[in-house]
Image (cartoon, rainbow, N blue to C red):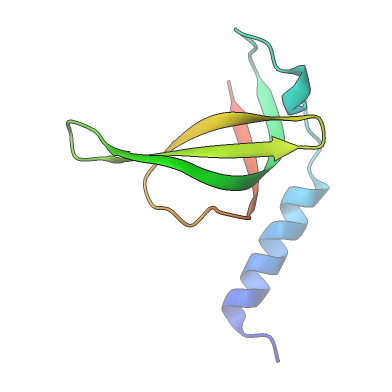
Length: 88
C-alpha cells in the first residue's frame, strides 16, 4: 500500500514530467534568460557553508543533452531526483 508521502512525491514527479521546457542543458549559453528545464541530480560534488552560515550545495545535474554543475542553497536530499529549474 502507498502511504500519503509516497503519493505526494508521485504526483510531484508527474507534474514535472508533464511540463514543457524552454531549454535543454546542451543548449544553454552564457547570459541566457527565461530558462525552464528538467534535470536529474546525479552527484553531490561539494558542500560549503557561507559567511552567513547558509549551506551551499554543488551538484552535477544532467538531461539527455549534457550535464552542468548547479549550486543550491538549503537542505540536501536532491540526489537521484528529477528537478524543475526556472530562471528569469
